[in-house]
Image (tube, rainbow, N blue to C red; front, side, top):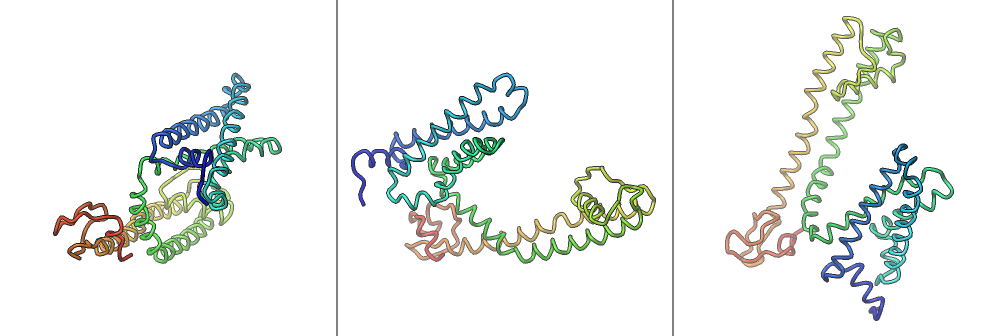
Length: 277
């Protein structure tokens, strides 16, 4: 059903980004979201809350009321209300106002208002950065294609952690902080990942030798998942170039961000680059 009157004007302002009014609305909205999130972060600092608690409370409800009105305005002027409500942005918009009302029942729920930061994702629409999502999809596809090898790799790492943790439990024992196998496995994971909290340290010469071996293994395997993902990424890039085919001369091999065919100079459109996907 076509929108008319006030609903049409609101739809152009709230959902549109091609008009100056729509672009200005989204820019103001993003700044409002950022300010409201900063206020939530500052309100979590006890010294600031003691001094400015009343101001934070008033501003919190001011922004909540503002976002509530905006949410229902979006529902009112949406072309398909059901689609908006259950869309990604619709759910995020709802979650942005929910914590304040939950705080009336559950203490501390208001701090969940940092969820509002997700609404800043609208900047992708405003700045026309949606075309860069193709590159993000490329990375996601690479990770998905490598999922089995990554799973096998992490399974092997987990087995190593259990083995080294069990050995350290036997060698060091509760006397040196290794009170159980799970805690020893925790130490192994911290050591292999080169985090090194230092809350548990081996004291015996044998334990220190095993710890040294664990650290070296950690450094040696840290590049394995990177190599797996890189190989899949290179494969997806090659496939992406093959799919980037010119509709004029029919030749492929263009980069995904190419604007003109490198063979005939024909203007490439998005449907050219994605024609065979």
